[in-house]
Length: 540
Image (cartoon, rainbow, N blue to C red; front, side, top):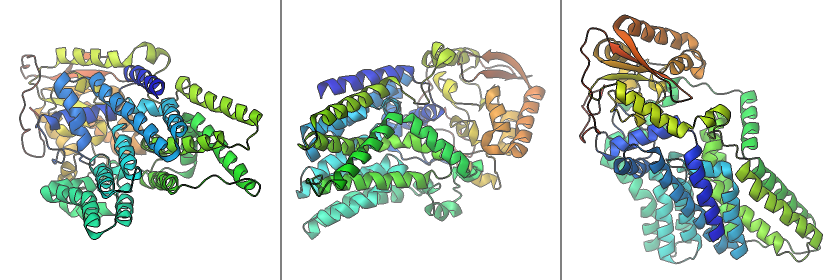
């Protein structure tokens, strides 16, 4: 196990330094940093607020302690991933013995594309760690303490990530079914139900988190909370696109898909000859893990039915369960006395190959290649941020439009919080501007006011403008006039003073308002404090 964990650690550290900073990751750290320092509430009107709270504070703390550091956040992610590999091995060992545990940990560690997600500075490793830890406690014995504690750990997934919420009723039902008396049932039920109920009762604004949940989201629309898919006018992808995306995802996890396929064939052969030999020994706990995996995988297709590409990323939350199942199956095959030596040797060679190759042939889309890799995106995003910080005074009011990575690592405070998510918070559909603002988006009235009147500087990504105008959810007829108006305001009221081009994915053009004296640059991080109230909130 020590060697497996060492391989995971080396791989995780390497990937943490290599991976391209994602917009989602940078926004996550930006929001977490502001929330941890008390400058915003995660469900304030100016914040989209569709995500669970706890990861923001955990990873935001790394930014408070180390400054705005991508590697500090990713180090925490790698640490969670290392614990996850260990807990995966321990869970598998509980279910199937030492070999089962070693195989499960090795299978998870070998999935380079999955480990890459765990090496990011966000929730990807934390969520499955909590899930596996809860199952480890729950399935390691049948005492009341284990039942209640396991239910409580699984129930805490509510505060980690909404795509894991479908597991909560399953955990609740299983804990109640296992309970031996009314007292234990009461405690187990309270462990799962009371924390989410208290969360919503504590502050009515927390209801905002439900806005994008299917069916339930309609209940909070009267409060002015709209789902981001509605504001973006996101279309459902057609069958051809979805099929192509599934093929791409199969390529991303090609060795894992191959391992699953071969495992299914071996199980089918074992069942076919079950009349001559004993079938695979049944274990209710393994069956439960398999049921949870298939149930949650099905929910991923339901939740991301609008675009299957997101399944590839969120599958990382379920990968440990699949690793446990595969470790159990292959440990059973290895112990089967009826398998001929030659077939056993071929199986061992195959398993060794699918445990080594995916570490090298890593298909994660965030791994840079060619010239982009040579440019070192992690270093480049910091260099671009430092460049931007030299050009824009800290106290200036900045209209920002583009991917948030460089702006975050510049150390500059945000002026309008709606713009720290990405350029996509300029609503495609702005039927009710008041509701748009309350949902963490903004519309053209805010562009006219912020860019047209209030901003001292504008930091604009030309690539972001082009993507928004021409390709953003296929609404050029709506978005082109918005981009044209922004360009007109820039031409009329601003002068271009610099271009930040160190980052290989996006460049940023810096504009200063004409006829207004520039603010003097100052150093240091912004002081802690609350953001100003109102729909156009500005962080200090």
